[in-house]
Length: 376
Length: 251
Image 1 (cartoon, helix red, strand yellow):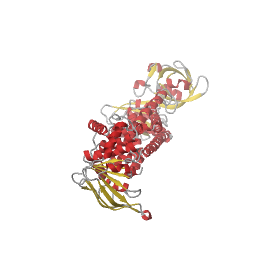
Image 2 (cartoon, helix red, strand yellow):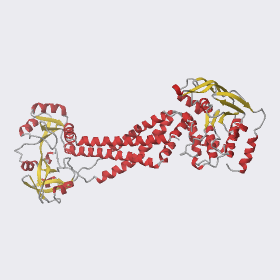
Image 3 (cartoon, chains in turn blue, red):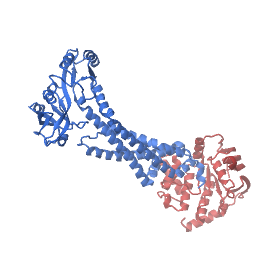
Image 4 (cartoon, chains in turn red, brown):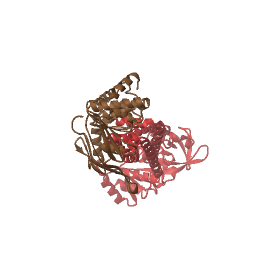
């Protein structure tokens, strides 16, 4: 009967129910979009680091992120790293912002990623056209098909200019997006050095692969002693540093999390207000229940059931809209991400939000004087 | 009248309000209610009828004096303990019915059993049984909005007796009803008292109800000022009259 009463109380006033559901729905969509953007941004920021097949990253001291590696590392540092016990390979990559001159005029910024895929540390993934062999051809690069319009090119075979060097698109990836909105351009490291005017054998990062069984921490300590002017970071550390740089030092992440918190706050206030007003409208019935001898817990359960039903209905509607937004954003430069974990967290959040919202209503019924049933 | 007293009030005093607005609503009321009796509590407005009913029903606690219900003294009980006592021993009937507008007749009765922890099919069967008992077997699925005043009060009566309480307390049960329905409800209360051996107390100032009473207690200015009792063996003629009326008019 608790559920029946809660359900009937909710559906008795359809307009108020609609307001409640809109409040929850608005909150869910806002939180889902903000956290979806946060997750999507995080994936874009850490994509290159996650895709690399390396145990440690050697960076110049103070490197902020994958895109902002700072001053270049020299071949000496690479050789020192190679001489460290437990190290199997040290693979240089060059990463830097560069100017992409559009075929029809104007320019935009890109991130050139110079790598030797044969070394196996970092290579373009999600190739949909062409192969690494195609990228090794003279002037060849790969671009992501999401950014073709942004780069002002039509696709395979298109030509453009990076800094002072001519390039030709020989391969296309799909879905390698950039948080900075400067598309990633893959090319062999030698061409990258040429395009970016990097001297000799210098590199932005050195990707370290360890011998099987070697201790990551022990090798890292050893490398730190040998490479005093550089930093030796685990993948996780470098990923966190990149996230921190782009999401928190720039304020973008704070804005996203702030938006999500605002959504939770707005949802809680709307649900609390409507639950309170529903309880107030049904206060005589709750007083009757109390007079009939129901325990406080019984009445609290009715209110919590109302909150729970609102949460489930609001969550289902909110998730449907969120998934539609997610689908619509799939080809945008900043697609939303929804994971089972996020979906479950949102459900838990909705339930908590509605339970917290029920507090004001519970306080109201706790103060009911059952004697009021005789005064009407 | 048979058995031991069900409800005993001894020297009950109730003060309402605070400071200069303090009013002594009851000034030492003592009353004993027996099973199998329909007692009417009559008195003018402001005489303390409803306050006494609230105290007898364990909704209000007396300022002083004691209430003993089915052998249990209520003095010092917590609000939740009093609520437990109410749901186990007392059925309430209210002047304005106090039905749940979003629940149908059957559900309105079931909820009284639900608060008592009786659920599922047995509770539904019991609710249906008592609704048939009060003549609403064909109105089980009707919502209060689709029932007449008399029917709504009979649902309230069914709700009050569903859990088989030893005491049924009614607050002005006929005040919102027309004559025919008023008689029907009083006849029902009298039957519940006599046939089910329950203690029924109705607060009223409706003179139409007098003929149904086994006992009439008069209260004025917070004090019991008189009591009349129907002579043993005398039937209430109104019950017979009402049966005739109900045959000729669907109330």
